Length: 612
Image 1 (cartoon, one colour):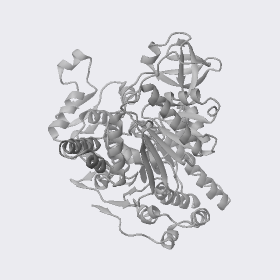
Image 2 (tube, one colour; image 1 turned 60 degrees about the vertical axis):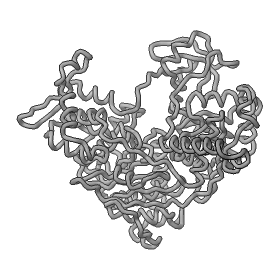
Image 3 (cartoon, one colour; image 1 turned 90 degrees about the vertical axis):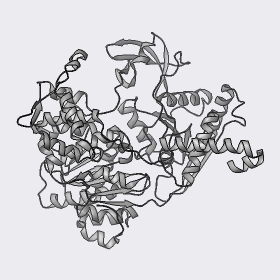
Image 4 (cartoon, helix red, strand yellow; image 1 turned 135 degrees about the horizontal axis):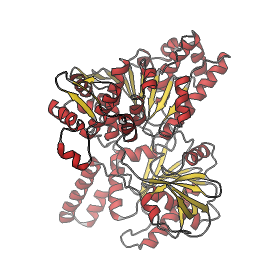
């Protein structure tokens, strides 16, 4: 049964369940529990499934981990800590994984300092960036807390040796669950979690979410179904409205009459003024190319103001450069950071006093998420400014602001019965072990996303994977599993099955990237699209990470460059635009229809009064 958690526990009640060292550490560091912690810590301690929805900086991550750390320290204190994974933390971003690792190591070190001894609690990040050496090391020294992404967890379930370490998992924490639930990555994860339950038995599911609607659907997505009904889950909804100061601004007086050059100059003048008026500013563009463009023009137009105090942060930069930007931001060494979407989730980036959104963020929830990065601490006001770039953008941003002020957030639509995702997961099950077809169908039906899947559709996917459609061979699609209909069994086909699975996992669209290295230092600085590389000629100049590089030559899938100065000779490289949320699109359509009616029936003053 899905229900709202109504009972709020006192500090004394929570302190009673904590190990004396954890109790002393928490009292010294925080003094009292925040609202999400008062609602959630006891339920997690009692092994109940919990979905925590609260604003950024409200302590929900600690609410999830406090009971887990407490349990591990109790075991360590009794020398009963086994060489296995107790907790899996899943997030949509690798950067968030690294951040959580740092934020968990800190309290563990402080707890060991108080106790005067080592607990030996290990945690490790395992993502696509993890080296083979580190992955092998995890077999010898298994992390008690495994920090990973949805795709890597699906791969790990098919790793014969490491899979054994997951057979007694007690907790799974899914962070930023709202950003996963609305797309196929979430569908993929929901099936992976059911496969994990098949392996490890019952474990506690903990979901962490920003402000999102409807929470009941997200809770069902988190816990899944059993015998046709949602598993039990408590919803901790602590959405006290964080104070927000949001404004939509136009850089010119008449956006329809301004030339592109006038609009560009006015936009960068406004950006510069806003940055100088605040201590640290975070600017969001919607694309990686937009990020590079903003940094380049700020450096070009205000040379004496922006040198080492401005950095880019997006997915095409190397891991080292992204971490450098995050660390410098935390240390207060940067005046401004420009990001595409990579900093909008819960990465700890220290104190930001202004967030600027260039153009529409395409959804109300994303606007609140981004602006919530300023005033990151509890009860601090978040300040955000949305700069519009054309008249359609102005209408879109005005509707976003209206809905945000009224607390009307886009409803998440969770995809259902995605057969492409299902085919990946059935293939994964076949690699794990030969299995019963009916049992596999039941596992799939336990996922919220497949609760209504018909047996015919399921068997159609099985037949496709078994290569039973002869016409597929003409398209070079061959059978990947075998099916024995008499015994009702299926299993993997071919020695390369595990390699095929691991190299094609997930639902993130394939993009062909080329590594970019400094020729003088052989140091990786990022990556660029293969299509962009095709347009580059020797000595061409382009921008990456806000810095200017001269292209020298390529070797295989590596582009070698050198630092240089001057103007780029190649237009900015391209990347995908963000999609407009369905709910927001309907609201914009409704607003335009209302205005059209008023233009027919009202005078100018009444229309202006209606808009304002």
